[in-house]
Image 1 (cartoon, one colour):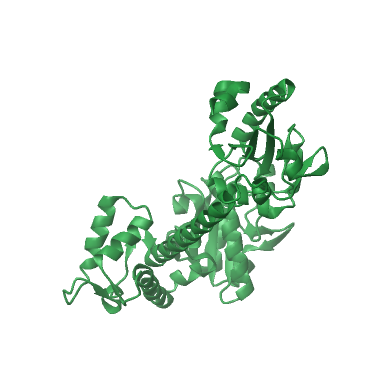
Image 2 (cartoon, one colour):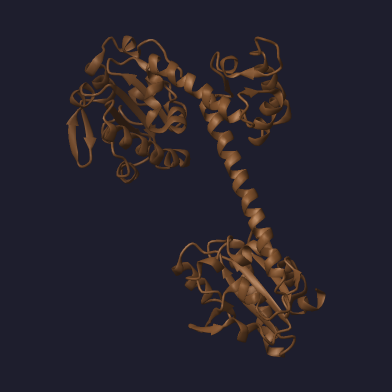
Length: 426
């Protein structure tokens, strides 16, 4: 973290007087006011948070910081006074934004103490927001890039401000990274494991090569691999990302890859089971369940698909703009095919909506059947139909013949190109 000599020297004062000069005599907390001196005197650290409602990165960071702040308050290990210095354009925006924050704020009416040109903004040379500057209680600036600390460490970010704790955390970070890179668990990290770790993070090949070489300079005994003591001999970071962050990211990616592999194996097994039912009359029950919705009532799945030439499964969701754009096109095509009476087409909506209300609103615009939203095994990307089809994006329109033989998973394009004649093109 970046630190500098006490900025209080520039203001010829320190302690509570320093913060009073920087922020004014009074601060807001909720609907009341408090003396600045009282707020900062009780704190171990003072954080000045320059932010604004109009700034998307600020609105993303504020909830994360609020969560960390509240956890620090709850633990009670350290007292962190946090003061919001608004860069909003009007008082209404300030009030709305400050209403989401659990800390203090400089009153918006305190001209000279808010905005980029505020005393705090000038002293910190603030050129962009969000900015989180952290001071000790005497006014010494400990870090002007506190946003990065919060995003990396959450409620433990303040520990990086304590030299003794920072050294301990650095050691723990290196141990975490070593454990993450030691993929085979043999107690050593070799160049291939380092490369695999960076590959899992999507690092460019040239960066990976450099980092492999950099870490292997720690190979004190020249055996071509790094023991734990060699690996953790000193701190290490890449483009500002600490060893702890890298270790967590590598482990998270590895776990995600393992989950994906497991899901793919389960999907493969399920597909084999379902394929064994093609032509048996119960294939669609396996994918969709025994009941479907139509006109507010439940009907038997078999009665819907039993006499059809084609069965289309439509995976879609109300929250998805391309889906909402395609659904009226598909409805027109479906209605035209229905009016002709042939070929016989059953279409079933498999919802990927996030809640029952969205499902109902969206399904009300459709002229076909749907899997009940309450049938959790049969709706969503992870539904049995979704697994069978390997669905990773919507809208998806998959068409089967009447026996359950899959004809295409890419009927969206065919509907757009051939309209009501799309089935003849399969």
